Amino acid sequence: SVEIQLDNPKYTLVEEERIVTLLKGTNHIDFSWAGTRIDKESIQFMPLTMKDKVRVINVDYPPNENALIWEVWADEPGPCRVRISYLIANLSRKFHYRAVVDADGKKLTLRKYIRIDNFCGEEYRGAGIFAGFGKYFRKKIGLNESKQMLMHRFDNIPAEKVFIFDWYQCPPVPNEPESKYVRWYYSFKNDKKHGLGLFPLQKGKVRIFQKDRRGGVAFIGEDWGKFTPVGD
Image (cartoon, rainbow, N blue to C red; front, side, top):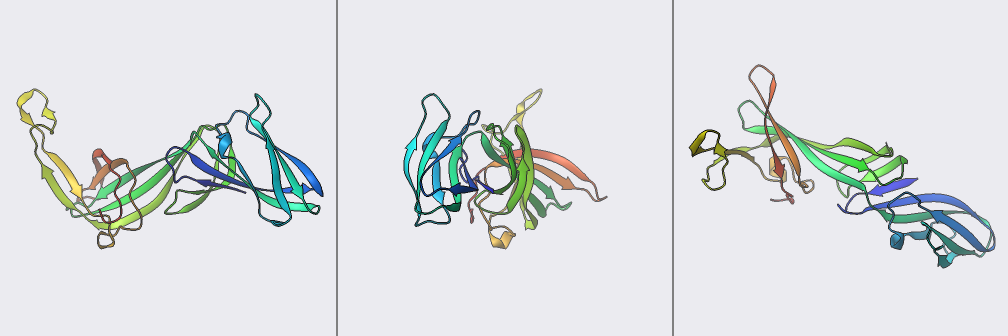
């Protein structure tokens, strides 16, 4: 089994569980990662069964190779479930959002998505995926593949429409040098009172749509949402 932890925006933690059959005494277990972006200093080996009878006594890194050899001592022979964990680059995540505002502009529905980009050189079949909060997913992540998943949907969020004018910050109106646009925002709080507050909202692009009186939905703009902790 494989578990992928996406808490950190730079490095991703991967934990693999495997069954290895050990002989009594010293065993040599090879682990290689040719063509992948594994941080070799982060690789760890941990027995999950036979914990008191199995231990790593030495680690050898062959020169000029993306590989290592564990010397593992077993007090008795038999199958042992082990966990191999490591940090890997280029297996990254991004967040983005879709907001749909009611026709009267007073409430909105917010969908939060996670997108995983796999350019690490490894394929993961049926991996468990967790971002440190929200849903737990079990998905196949192919080599050089991007996958998008809905993390959560928040309905009926009370939103305040805010108009802001700042001569120095607002963009100019084309062909009208004496005019500037007024910026238009939807403001809400990441708390339970506003139907949110389950977890922080990570930085991501927000595409904003609005319903019309006839049941249609129109795109009205997009912006980058900042990191918003619970309560902000």
